[in-house]
Length: 182
Ligand SMILES: CC(C)(COP(=O)(O)OP(=O)(O)OC[C@H]1O[C@@H](n2cnc3c(N)ncnc32)[C@H](O)[C@@H]1OP(=O)(O)O)[C@@H](O)C(=O)NCCC(=O)NCCS
Image (cartoon, rainbow, N blue to C red; front, side, top):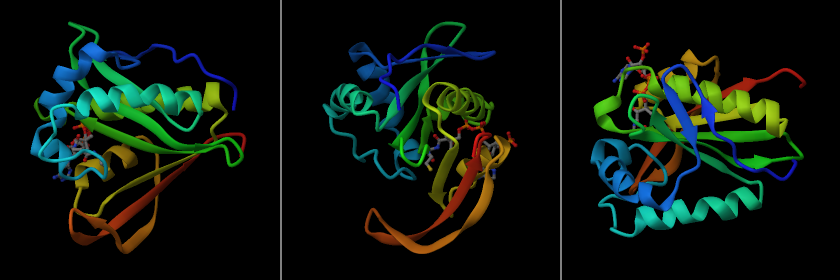
């Protein structure tokens, strides 16, 4: 994969841009909400005060290694932070990435995640030559599965008791998207 200067992406309602240190307070507010953190693999709960700063600071290293790229999902109207979308575990050999996303609870079910993910995948395909994207979610997270189906992912199966999620072994649903060029 080529070296990347992370761009800003625009959709009808959203601007997707790199996170900056001053986003930390909004991240604490949104990702600190148990409803957002609980179904994810990576957001701690309770949310430590410095977790947002550390998470934002980690993006540069992932980008430089070309293993992950994370965008702040912000409102075109007022610039407020709505959530985050990312391509992670990127492999240039396999031309593949895994999808990650969360949206602040006040903004759920308005199509924000699907709109942001569509732009992210288009960017990954166009700029990073990614031709396969994987989406994984807890089997008990229908909102997340619905996002993946809405943007064109195919269901690829159910992995039984695949993850130790906060102390309980849980099933995952696996989804995949094949992009042209593969
Ligand atoms: C999953 C998440 C990112 C979705 O964000 P969003 O902006 O609300 O997503 P969208 O509005 O684009 O799509 C959500 C879809 O799921 C549907 N949905 C939501 N909750 C649902 C439920 N309990 N059962 C069935 N469908 C549900 C919505 O109606 C919507 O579908 P529709 O557009 O056909 O009506 C958000 O809920 C979130 O951040 N959850 C916590 C973090 C998380 O789960 N991240 C993913 C980890 S794999």
